[in-house]
Length: 369
Image (cartoon, rainbow, N blue to C red):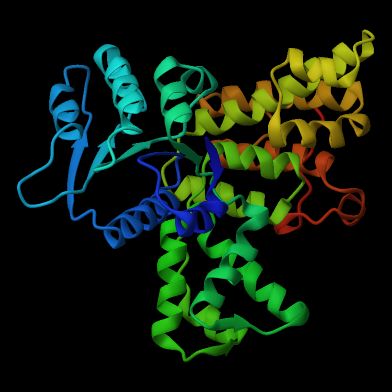
């Protein structure tokens, strides 16, 4: 039985099942969901808890199977927690999980909690995961995406009886907060808790948030790709600066940008050959948020623009590997900025594109030198 994370609280109020599986890559939200299940279990007399962490292919599953089938002398109900950080239980683990899942319904004295990272489609289609889903409750814990982060912060502030002021200034305060904590939800949670310690319940001003919230944002190249394709110039600037400060490899940033340009070019060529856009996107394995971004920007990108972007990506490939290119910055990160903003400018929403804001006042050229 699949359950949305937002429905967990209501589900627990109706009663506990004997088997729960949580999977996702957001540590804070996984921890909170697991804590909610444990708290509900303790309230119903599950007084003992054992934790088993599956580390490597040689993990002994017999201990887990034994724990699930026996109770101690001091408790008539127990929680058996199985953590699989790799998401791969191994050759012996798959059958063991199937056995645990099948026996869970008849074992009222044991609540089994399985914790997994984000799973790919093949793993979710495996026999052992299917058994967990069939005999228990599975909850996919999704991360809070950037566009939903400001609202998430507002909801968390409300839980501690705080809020930002209404209107445009309040929205600016939430966006400022989100910029400071993007990509680091655990730190965002800590910054929200800090506000409860510093200020009383009620309305928070921008000045209070600005002075209290640290810049704890963490970025990855995949989110950079989304920001560039969305035409979010200011966010792209922050992310590039953040990735450089965190020591991200220039070649990885370049690969991400270049692969987006190549994918746009391949889809555009397929459309020119008569392929419908949805079919071309599927053939190039473009889906999810990136699919929606491609659908928005592709009609506006001309073949000449894409050829110039592709040539620029080729030049930057050489720069990040130490080559000198006339009319281009010799510093790899400066060249990456120029390439990223060239693509970002072409992908910007029409109103923003007309304004063409450029960091530092310089518009990066797409044209090959």
